[in-house]
Length: 214
Image (cartoon, rainbow, N blue to C red; front, top):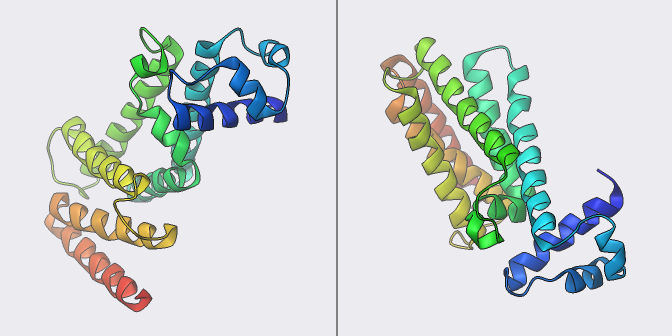
């Protein structure tokens, strides 16, 4: 991505977050970027195209953070690395995470672009695959991998949104520890008996680390 396009998308995300759809205009975007409106129109033909590309780039970046986990050699390693990629993205790109979970109608779209829907479906399948292979490896309890992946995603997304909206009065590194602590507690409940003990021990280790940080 060129430096100019990156700046346009970053300013567009800021502008939308501050002013919403009704307050967003190409003129205001040009002023934020520091160029004339015609210069913006050389890249995009209107507001909808800009916001669509913001959403597109957010999903692409999110996918890169997650798919890096596929380099791990074991099911548990891939699962853990995917979780790490998720929380890294939330902390490093909070505005993009927020706009990814904004209803398409609030972005001026009648429906999401097909390529974005495809990326969303691929990420959903990625999580289902991580759960399924952990079940097959005897790490997670048997059951519908899609239902369990939705439960886990809802937990992670809820934590992320609470942090983004200031409901956890903690710094980034403290939130990382809080996220790991909560995730270990969830995992100890859905793991097989053999691995539940391991996650319980992990939870104790995280709680000790949290306590030492106070």
